[in-house]
Picture (cartoon, helix red, strand yellow):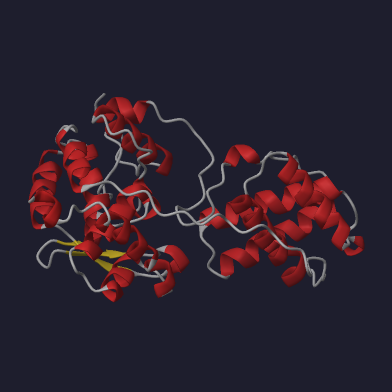
Length: 313
């Protein structure tokens, strides 16, 4: 399927949470129609405060969605809410099959609204199950090569190569503009990444060469590096997710391949090549080194697969 057909398949969906946010699905949440003036007044104020404080659009969307749902589910004057009301709502979400990671997000949203905004101490001692710690899914170098070789030259292959070659989050990929690429220095600036922070990333010399050829031949010009062929508008994160899945399936890779999987592969392969973990932390845009250090465990798992030369005698 070519790029244009991919674009035409787009459907309007609510954006998913950022790759590093909990792995929850928007399907777990049901939009509730506004009815209560008190609730809507508070929600409007909360939304404005989240914007001023620099929360990302996706985090803002999810905080508002879960906060509204919680208010209407409990359906009581806000100043009369107690701990048991909150516990009841969380239990309801758990019974619906809500993942622990999603419960964590709901808890964070409720802390902001009920404790920070309304000054209600109703979440004290409410413990949320911790998200299960799993090693990141990583592709081998051979799988990366197969993925690229089975994708025709053009936007999609360049995008796959960019995600693996830069370690960018999918939310950063769709916002990448041509003006943010320094082709001479082979670097790019990620503007307003997670936590609203800018950072620098490195670019591949070969990739830049191919990108220049692609941009020169591109019929519909755009300020975005990866855009729709029909109108030059940026791709959605859902479209990128779908492109990655289809490319992996076409390549015969029997793994759950996502944009974040390519980011994990980038970090792991850098670490295996001896790159200083502090550099990797900076390139990935991690605030804490602890987040980056999970890749040392992945690299260790890869090392266990190496056969001792003694066994080859």
